[in-house]
Image (tube, rainbow over all chains, first blue to last red; front, side, top):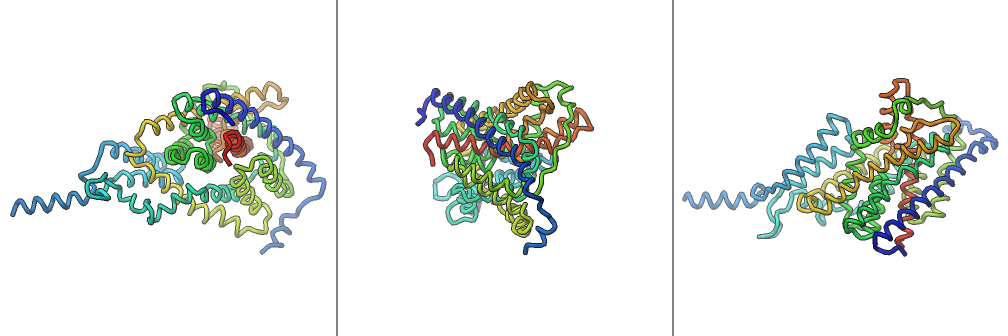
Length: 53
Length: 389
């Protein structure tokens, strides 16, 4: 897909660097929605621990 | 009689490695010794450097030839070659069993709260990866193939398991020098990063404080690993094994009902894996294989990757400050290079030296953790573009 040449290395780098920014920004966007999860309620950590084992 | 005694001693000498010592062995023993010194005296990642340094030293103590007239074989190679204990240790690395297990342990000991608390900073996890691409292009320029160049470039992600993972997929014959370069530079980050960070920031910028992060709820922390695992498995199948195990480890930690499993993954299992990994890496450092032109190039390119990654992280943070209402200390940008939590600690220490009231460790952990995903994403895209599954 990518030619084995200096041009290929530059092409690979530019695409990869750009897409990394796009994807990580997407993850950042998803994380920015996380506070809304708290509207669903709160988890009692003490009860959570007691429930196991 | 005297002749026979001399003959006897000569035969005895040939059974030892003493007659086969080469200058390269001495150089590598000095390197191994330096690693152990740095681990003990400077506390530079002792968990990694003690094992790597020790096995590097032993790998360079030559033994007698394996076959008459053949090259001398290190005693360590008897446990590294097929049938020996560390042969299987190395196979664990080469067959990609160990890297996902390391990620399981890392996930089980990591609090992703700082990353969830300040999502804006995750961009630094991509910004600090310019080093990958600088090293990739330079590696191609000096004559490596594109696959080899990609594997060399990923050193700049400062993520040992990911470097091993990508290298095994792209250029397995370079696994030794690349893993040594990646782990050595990760351990030496407290020496490599600060000069670059100071060069690119003003005293006033280094002194900048940051407000306390919001508290992240348990529900958010439990949902996080599942969401990230879905995103990565959906879009980046080539690196899914690593991130999936990272997120499984984190889920074990956060749910609260699998404390035993989380403790094992982050404790005993992780310690066993570290011993196996460090000895497996150090055992590849025999002078005849390690002191080659290609290895020196890889080590040099790896250093450049770390330097450029650190620099691009700081510069990305400074660019972000042009648009942010609440400015960030640019020193946390260098933590985006990954290498959890070493890079975050370095950011904190440099900021704390400028202003003793500055405690940026939690702020730096956000980009630091994002850097793990940044390296995985870069590696995943690279594997996909190079057509490697």
